[in-house]
Length: 173
Image (tube, rainbow, N blue to C red; front, side, top):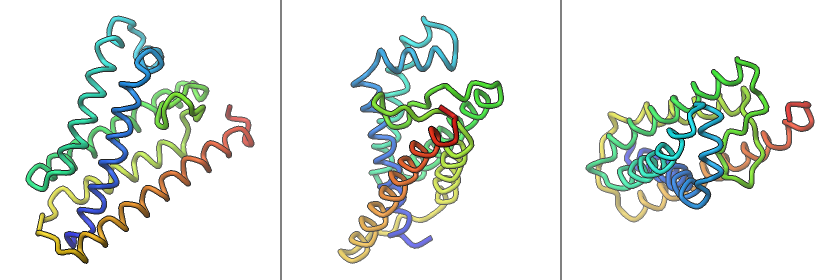
């Protein structure tokens, strides 16, 4: 894959993981309740939320550093697939009313097929680039990478809003 594409996707995933980690640090009680809903163990949630936040922030940093990018991409793919599997498990158990926590505590988006698919697409995108090279970028290559990252952030935020709007209309919430 061309270096601007790999860098652009890495920047996009850095945004996802950086925001996710910061959300958990800013609203630990909300995420403790959410983790307890997914994994019913209050004691585990108190420890898990800071650990998950730290892990997400480490993935974000790894995605920024070219030498660590392959590891960051692999970790992003694994974490996103794990979140998708966890959401799918809850959804299949009939817990479609369970919030996903993807967009922070202000969001009321619940688990469902669209979120599961979005996570799997992002996981696949990250996983497909693990073996990409890290060639240095010139000014134009970096500009293209930043443009791609911003475009992917825009698509992600649009998908988030579409999902948030569709759920009440479909009666899922």
